[in-house]
Image (cartoon, rainbow, N blue to C red; front, side, top):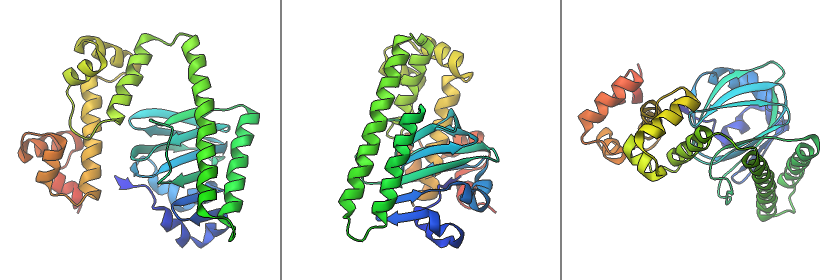
Length: 282
């Protein structure tokens, strides 16, 4: 697993300098297809840690992603909002794929979890207009960084309003009990402090029995709660192993394992290598 491309690295690619704007901790990429041959192809199937917030507006083609263990299929007219500290896999990208992407940190985020919005033409064009204006401001010597942050806040607020309306429409169409409970379960994982959770703990937090939670999640995802909990713990462990600078024993304690050997056994069983082998591949 690797950390998602550091935004400052974009400035090292001469081929895309005309479609990338960097202003403080905000980065605007106007033509993601230009990155496909340089970066995306090398990320296919890889697990990425995305530490910054991101809004991706898909302007052409399709892509299959997995974000925080959940599938995310995108097409032209889709917008994906990803909060900070998410996990993403790029599973497939077709030849026509293109997107405009804004990355940021230090902006108050109205989204608690990642969201996929499938917008109509007028709404999608309005989102693209925000990116156009962000692009202009990012290149202006007279506009303050606060102006850029204000525009980005407005973009996120507009998307949040559209998403709330879509969620209300879904509520009105009576989503299944399994779908509602499964989303609450994934929300609980996303809010985790990183410590390993048990099925019983999750069931208590969601006010259902362990058996009911297991049945509903399996019905909706095809995976058991135990499989998803273990996968989430592995994701947290990989990030800490690669990016925290903590020793294996400290990571074991942070994740809630009884001792380092139990963590090592768990990680070897789930990831196929020991924590140290993952940190220092041959």
